[in-house]
Image (tube, rainbow, N blue to C red):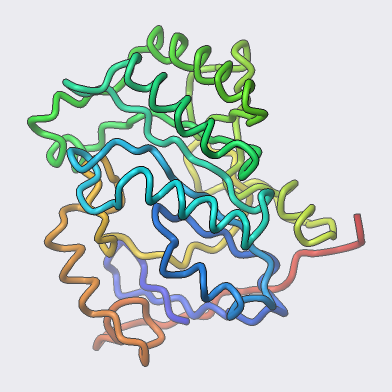
Length: 280
């Protein structure tokens, strides 16, 4: 597989996808429905899913199926892959003209009740107003939460989740939420991967991520500006038109997710090897 650098410098990484060197695959998704019946095609891999389910509706999540349908998809995936391999993300926590703490508490409890028994963990994070997000969210009244608002909603969300036997963790949050029972998470989670693989890993923290990120070393094979969900708070898309154009360039016969090799591309192999050691 070839992965183009997101910095637009014609550098392309050649990634080996053989199970011999891929210890675990981590999928980020908001709607894996088309993929669920194809899980048998990747049965030689170990994997888990980070499933973002917020249920904000089409005002913010333009092309996400309705809440009832997505909850059904979550349950179906959990039943197929196993409860321990589907992590719920309630991300980002956002305030708008129509979404406040009361909305979140009612919405979160409804989701937690539905997902009880289908996941054991919920990862939360808060809106970070990148320039592209600010542009796409114009007219919604969306804003970042103040620290006191983070404390207030975190305490209540944690209590709700705990009542449904769901552990709450926080992704890349600068504010310390440990007093509310919410510890920092690792989305690329060494402990979880070791449990799935059944072996110890030699990987360390990923030094290329922001300071607050606790993820372990991995290779990202995704591509920006390719998602058609059109969530207005998304940091991975500049705009829907660009994403739709790139999506149409997908070619099943190409080693790239979108498009093909271009003149001037510099293709470099990534050093890859399995990081597993002894049994747990």
